[in-house]
Length: 105
Image (cartoon, rainbow, N blue to C red):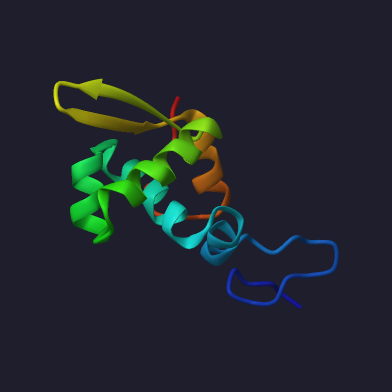
């Protein structure tokens, strides 16, 4: 019997993680914030407010948790705060097969 990428996993294989697992781990909004930052290479708090349609306070709260978890870094740039994904954040997204994940070589 041959196996295919879309077929069931064989004995002893681990099925690939799914995007909803990341949302369960981080929370749905926090996962969306992380994916958006990764997709843009960097994003300001204002960018995220507009794209995710949540308040600035909500974005600030979620980026603080992601920063404390070493998944993003943030820096003030004039009146804005710019958020950038870290290698750890990229690894997490890549492990879950999510958009925005990219390789750093």
